[in-house]
Amino acid sequence: MALATLANWPTSFMPNQHNSKAPLAVTGIGAACGAGFGKTALKEALFGTKNLFSFLERPGRQSDKQDTPFIGIELPESPPTILPARIERTVGLSGRVAVSVLHEAWHEANLDGVDPKRIGLIVGGSGLNSREQALAATAYSKRPAFIPPRYGHVFLDTEVGSICTSAFPIRGFYNTVGAASASGLVATLQAMQAVQSGQVDVCIALGALQDLSLFDLQGMRAMGAMGSARFKDAPQKASRPMSQDHDGFIYGEACAALVIERLDSSRAHYGILAGGAQVVDGNRGPEPNSKSQQKAAHMALQKAGLQVEDIDYVNGHATGTPLGDKTELETYKELGLEKAWVNTTKSILGHGLSAAGAIELAAVLLQMREGQLHPCNNLNPALDTSLKWVGPAPQPHKIQNALKFSFGFGGINTALALKAPSSEEQHDA
Amino acid sequence: MGSNIIFEVLINEIRLTIPELVDHPIARNDAMADLGVNSMERGEILIATLEAINLEIPMTQLHGPSNLGELADLIHAKSTQQ
Image (cartoon, rainbow over all chains, first blue to last red; front, side):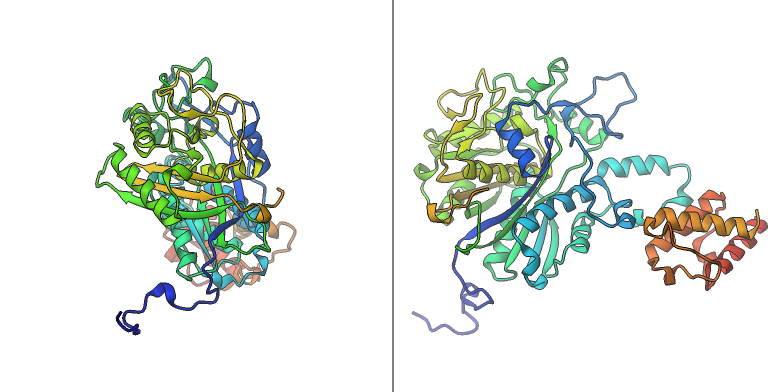
């Protein structure tokens, strides 16, 4: 064995302030979805029966033509006011929602006592403010001399992270990662790395709200990714992941933040982020790739020290696009996940795009804590009946080991394996 | 439109931009920086003021004044040149 020198000394052995090999735990969650702000609203959405799907009504999502409006989910209320008035008035929807969600996660994890230099933030998402950008561009198109100067910087995706770090004492680092619909999960993977490497002691992963414009909606419909208006008389039936009747995903506004730090048995936590992986399959477009999905799962399981048969719950990407669902089913079956419970969070919350991976990870952790799985809506007739789908009612089940998938346009495949807190570490909500 | 009216427009825009100053007295010899208005906000206030009085001039022509009264005088002078 070669002697360790400074040159070959593995960085993972380098001492840091918290020289611990403790696993990574989620100690705080903030959420916003179609049911409202906060985890209570998210739980009501997941385990209740209220339909959240309707028609998109925000300014900038309406067509001049007499088209049927897009089916989807919008937040039912404005974010709680947290920012000073002078800042609040200049911040877009995605930024204001992020601050609210971060506020919830921050206080649950009790981060006020942590050295700000040891806290990091990774915002997941790109093109976050396109609806408001389009509205502003139209409003000022005939009077460019009077464009408010802030439009020189708010179009950058750093806007969300900069607002968050101006409102909370986060001084370790922040950045923004774009990974299409996997952004929320990629932000989580990178936040995990930031804590594992010792760069910071606490890292917050935030899947930001993707504020889609009409043009974005129309583009995604043109590419065949977004569901049609054929359920316009019954919008609650439109989001049909893994159903034979699916014809695309249905948008749902969302945002979630997860506080990630080393497990400390004296502190409450939701679960363990045991191992995650990202696989790039070299594809610019939206086509899914089962082999890469499987590879991501195998890598995540290996890092977690788990076997496929250890997984008793799968939270997939499952958007409701025909090719996406078919490809993902192939992944489940090739991996041998037939014994694990499966449900489709997008059948309840819609597809949050940049936020999807984070809000669905929050859903996994809340189900873990609640000891039940949320229903699977609009599944029947199911594309595949050999899997263990949760039915139309909540399913009592204590998750031990979960596997979460998120995929993104541009050949992005991610998987994350989670473990339940051990019984002595569990805390009541 | 006289300098005093422009000064009133400036105050209105300051209070729209910084609602925290809504009850704060603002006089002609106050400088925006002394009121806690940061540089981006000063830019927003100036542009909104120019839009309110429909005056299109480059922002660089408004450098120099040391308080709101001088700024109102300068904007007034520019508006009469147009």
